[in-house]
Each structure stands twice: as C-alpha cells, then as structure tokens.
Amino acid sequence: MTIGFTLQLLGGPFHRRAPLEQQQPHAPRLSWDELSTSPRPRDCEPKQHLVFLKTHKTGSSTVVNLLHRFGEARGLRFALPHRYQLGYPLPFQERHIKGHRPGGAPYDILCHHMRFNLPEVQKVMQADSFYFSIVRDPAALAASAFSYYQAVVSAFRRAGTLGHFAAAPERYYDPAARGNHYARNLLWFDFGLPVPPASGTKADATVEAALAQLDRTFGLVLLTEHFDESLVLLQEALCWDEDDVATFPHNGRRALGPAMAPGLAAQLRAWNELDWQLYTHVNRSFWARVEAYGRERMARDVARLRGRRQELAEHCLAGGGPVPASRIGDPQLRPLQLGRAEILGYELRAGLGPAERRLCARMVTPELQYKDLLDRRQFGGNSTSDPT
Ligand SMILES: Nc1ncnc2c1ncn2[C@@H]1O[C@H](COP(=O)(O)OS(=O)(=O)O)[C@@H](OP(=O)(O)O)[C@H]1O
Image (cartoon, rainbow, N blue to C red; front, side, top):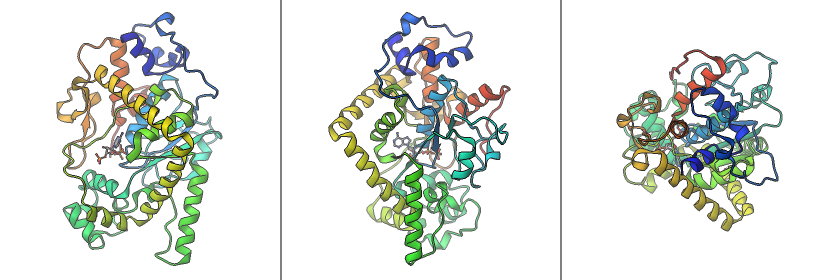
C-alpha cells in the first residue's frame, strides 16, 4: 500500500515529480521501479496554465489545495500575492503579484483571492491558460460568510444573527461601508462584474452581457453543492489524473446545526439577487456539461473518486476525517480561525513513513501555510503570511 499510495498521490510519471524531490534533499528518493506504474493512457496533454478565480466561501480553498499540489509537484510558477490576497477587494492589477516585473515571463498558475479583472490577468498569464472558478447557492454562501466575517463586516455585526440580517438587510447594510461587499452579491463582486441599474431593460441587458462575458472567459465553473461531479469535470477538462483532483474538504465549520429553513434561504437569495442569477445561469451550463459527459459515466467516476478519497483519508488522517483546529498540534496544519465557528482541519496519522507523511501533509496543509511554502520556493527566505 505504501508504495502504491506514494505513487498515486501526485498522480503521474516520475519526471513530473522531480521538483518536489529536489526541494526535499533529505527525503528518501524512490527508485524508478517503485514508481513505475503505468500512467493513464492519454489522448490529451495535461493543462498546466491555469487561472482559478478563487471566490469566497465556496469551497475554493479545497480547489486551491489541488492546484498548489499539482503546481509544486511539477515546479510550476505561481503568480503569488504579496501577502495573502491579490489586492482584494481592489480589482486585480498586475502590481498585486509579488516580485512581478511588467513584461516579464508569464506565470503558470494564478489561484489566490482576487477581484477578477480580465485585461490585467491576461497581461501576466499564458495566452492558452484555462480559466475556471466555483460558485455556491447564495443562501449557503451567505450563511458561511456571515459566520466567518461577522466581526469584520458592519452589516453582519449590527444585525447580530443571520435571521435578523436576512429579514431586513437594508436596515444594516451600507454599500459604502468597508467590508460590506461580503454582505451582498459576493460572487458578482468577486467575478468583477458590472453592477446593473436597479431595474428596467437596461438592468436586464447588463446582467445578460455580464453572464455572456463570463461564459466566454471561463472554460468551466464548478458548483460547491456538486463538488465531486465538479472535480470529475475538472479532471476531464484539464486532462489530469484522478489523484490530481482527489482532495479533502478544507475550511469546513464545526457544528453547522440544522439545515437552513426554506424561508431564510429565500430571503437570502432575494437579497443576493445578482448572485442568484449568476448561480442559476452557471447551474444550467453545469448540468449540460454533465449530460454531455454522460450521467452513468459521471456516477461511476464520482463513486470511484469518493472511494479513492476514502482510501487516502484512512491512510493519511488520524481518525480518518476532519478535526477541530484546537486538536491540531502542528501549527503548519492548523487552519486560520476567523469568526465564530471553529474551522476544521486535519491531523496526520501516526506512523507514516517520511515520504508518505510529506505527501499526506500536502493534502491537508491549509491554504495560507501552503502559500508560504510556495513563496519560499519561489523567493527563498522565511516568509509567513499576514492574513490581514
Ligand atoms: N468539498 C467540499 N464540498 C462542499 N463544501 C465544501 C467543500 N470544501 C469546502 N467546503 C465549504 O466551503 C466553505 C469554505 O469556502 P472557502 O474555502 O472558499 O473559504 S475562503 O473564502 O477561502 O475562506 C465552507 O463552508 P461552510 O462550512 O458552510 O462555512 C466549507 O465547508
């Protein structure tokens, strides 16, 4: 199991892993024989030029984990932020990339929080980059954002509870107040789409044009609610191996409580009306993609991916699943805690060999710490993120 596991986790032939091995001069080197399972037969080349618009509270850190792993294992160059986010909430500018020189070599992967701004992204990324993102039902997204950002968003703070906020958001919400973009149409904001007039045909036309632009730019938009179907579509779109998209959920909350009441969900969707339009639009294209992929094939591949994740969880994780951050001894594996709910992370199983331990650790390293690691790889030094 050890060798097979080690082999599969980074998914792919030996030479694609060389950069990771190079960074770990004291790690035991695995021999060619140990690594030589046959790679998946391919009729396509794995995509390595990627733009992932990391939207907030959508499961995007889970997606970033697989991009971090893929990029690190292959020595790809990330467009990294100076600190933690790429200039957010300002529209992205090339100067938000650490160490960037205008006109310098394009990057392979861009995947940290930004407010999307296509012309500036195009300036720094490869022309053949694959653009993708992820969206979530605005009701669930609002609940997650409320829990996470309550202390820093005045509209949430003043409302006190999600129920109070949803019942009368206008009472608490001032669009000009700092941080209040988290409180309304956060997806629309993150996608950098133009805000339409309040109503009328001009409003409809603006929304339609914005969604058409989104379709032209993004090759795939994932759905949080159908994460595993999303990963299967992503694997196909990127021509990656299954283990490249096998990932544990990051940034989950402890004690979620009962499912959201339909009335509350309806209020939150109405308040986040632009996001609701975006979500329903993307939803339609998503299911058309699933249809084209084949429903049965999708069900089979989702089941296989879940089986593989389970296998990895049993192998890598103490207790086989997520644990509250307070129980995680290693600070490198402890996720950032913000807001009321405790954010969950993972402890590694005791007794893993050094190479396995490193690979398992990469799967559970939270976004901030992994970003720091990539930063040290690209720039050297001892950088640690300042999440503020
Ligand atoms: N695989 C998978 N499937 C379904 N849901 C998932 C998954 N991974 C993460 N999540 C949920 O996404 C929420 C965290 O989102 P982000 O990682 O985008 O947050 S952040 O903006 O980077 O802080 C957070 O939602 P809430 O728990 O509702 O707060 C996570 O539980």
